[in-house]
Amino acid sequence: MIDIGKILKRAWHILWNYRILWIFGILLAITSGGSGGGNSGSGGSSGSNYNANGNANPGINWNSSPFLRSLYTWFQQNIEPLILHPAQYIATFVWIGIALLLLFIVIGVVMALVRYPTETAVIRMVNEYEATGQKVGFRQGWKLGWNRRAFRIWVIDLIVSIPGFLLLAVLGGLAFLAYLGVRGGTGAALAGSLITTIGCAFLFILAFIVFAVMLSLLRQFFTRFVALEDAGIGEAFRKGWNMFKRNWKSAGLMWLVMVGLGIGFGIAGVIVFFLLIPTYIVLAIPAVIVAIIPGLAVFGITSIFASGPLAWILGVLAALPFFFLIAFAPLSVISGWFKIFDSSVWTLTFREIQALENVAAPAEVLPPPAK
Image 1 (cartoon, rainbow, N blue to C red):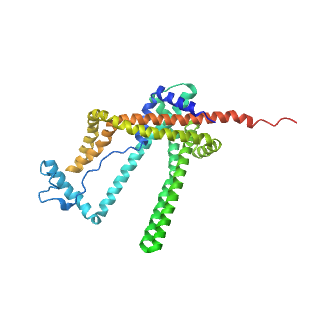
Image 2 (image 1 turned 180 degrees about the horizontal axis):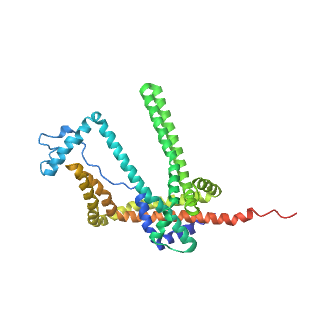
């Protein structure tokens, strides 16, 4: 059985004594933290709420400045018809969808090119530090992650995400069956169809949650066989599963401990978020300065092909991620600390399980005593 207390203390020591890992933690927090930010514009008023002078309501004077007048005109000419007559602009919606899809693909590729080498580097840096006590700089650490091992970990994540897509397909099918039942049924048949569909959906979701938890636990072993032993994808699945089977009690207990620590970190994070509000205000000035550069670049390029408020809107959209990145940098640092701690815990767990198995292995292969 692994010594959980010793592993947690050692991971805490590594976090505070190997501070170059903090940079990798920030990169992990940015690329895999799931934070989102961006407020949709307020609104929701229909075209009938506009008066003849171009005012949406008495609280907004669209004639107060040339920019507001041009913004209202652009909205009236380009956006309002899409809302009022969507059936006439199907091709436009298709092109918008294609553009958004391409944008998401580009963002996803960039994020993956940062996340997986970073994750691989953290695993290998912690393992090397634990084995030899040697620390490396950022460049050497990045080299430890920028290789085929990072690509294999990406493929592993792609494979383990397939059940999620299958669940969405199943739930979509159940929703379609529910629609058919509602459409064609009446009375008791309708109620029975809805109850059956909802019950099946609940069972599928519950099964998926259990399966997702199992995959998240197994992934800790898959990725470390790849990162630390340069195992192939199939080999990592096989070895990771076998290690988990032999040590499922230790792995499950460590997972429960980390879930508890994660919940505690989440609660503390909410409190810290509000405590850091003065810091966000102070960082807003450098955030604006940094965000202006990409915003003006996108505005300049867009203004060549488009005129009016569209160029400004795209420029602001390009600047917002940089603004939030700088303004909320303290949150990225704190989140990065926990990610480094979590990764270190599982790397140390992997090492201790291997050490225990290596100690036990010779006893299993001893020849039988001579008669």
